[in-house]
Length: 524
Ligand code: SGN
Ligand code: CA
Image (cartoon, rainbow, N blue to C red):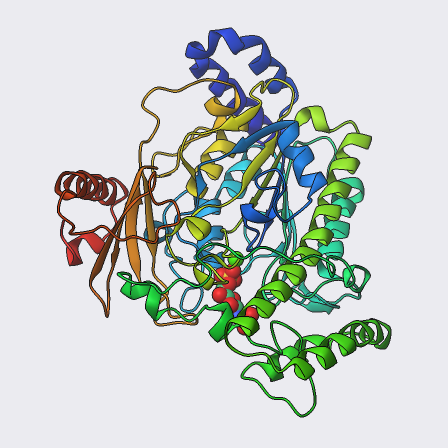
């Protein structure tokens, strides 16, 4: 059977199985004639605190807000393992890290022979493509067209790995270039008779936050309020105390904050140079013209202690927002294109990040912990005709749910070994009974950069139980309603016995359900 026929038969099978959805029969029939397209935009380290549709304190992201305004915003959206490669593998497979095999960025190579949602969609007659950050070490499979950046990618004049396996350097700013390639594929390269699934994977807003020269001067007049727990002392939280992701202690003055001067040194100075040396003379001249007075002023001030910490936080916030600005503009270009071509009514547009990020909460940058800022990830969707839900969706969802959602949308039967759950009923406005009441999390990358200990845990939205293990054995329990910033570890305190037992049971059940072998090392 050719792939197009296979698509229609899959859609027909889905229709036949849809006796329960009699009321939406008409819509389903319409979809079967004209299958929905999917545009999946994923950024890196873009946290909800820095999107105005989630949080108006810092950022103004009008284009991201357009997505949420014409669709839905998930308020309880989480990752399974707060790190790039693992998140991407969870997203592609619909399975937790131990099940898809990609548990950490440093030791894993993604087994590209395993089933992924792009492969299933391809079989069902979709055209599939990915442009941008991939970060899974093996080359992409399941795509009709791909171009990826090696590893983390470079903001300026980046290299792309192309399908022949060659590496090609392209002049420009990465966020623009990934968008250009994506729009070019939509307009000139795809087979317009087929439905499409396009993955646009940005490097932005990843460290070390190199802004486009056009945006360098933005936000310089802004002073940002410090989070209440910026000067956290990590009392009662051994793993939090052991981390190396403090803005004050670990954020590099040259690499992260660009305070580069010939007589100054820092642990990551050479890495900074390897990045900015990619700029051409025009880009570099603008860069230097902007930074020179700031560098001069910074060293003249000779800051230390809390003053230095606060100065670092302000520069971090400004740099991050400048990189967000490019991203938001480029998302706008994609939305405008889809609108102009009359594709919006028939396309689901998803925007998410590979995880959340700390913007000074607990004094940190980076992610990895199961604490809220990095466990949470933004998820907004612009919905096509026929999906009527609008506003907030408050059910607990996780990045393992994306694959089954896309399969159901394409009329492909969801394989039994997929661990996530399709979000389609939520998008259609249903209120499914028995929606999951707790989420499982497992972070594996230790020892590694930023020194975040291995841990697994469970959250039901009201309480969170975490076990840090490996070279540590510490349990943490949080009452999220009373202590949303997770400052007060109440594990083992009198009066918490029954909630602890309840949360341990939830953790045990999820470890069994997902078949995580860690449960044999630390039986509950
Ligand atoms: C790089 C960064 C880290 C970051 C990891 C993982 N260091 O190694 O700060 O935690 O990526 O990020 S850097 O000096 O190279 O910038 S992830 O999002 O790709 O998982
Ligand atoms: Ca990331």
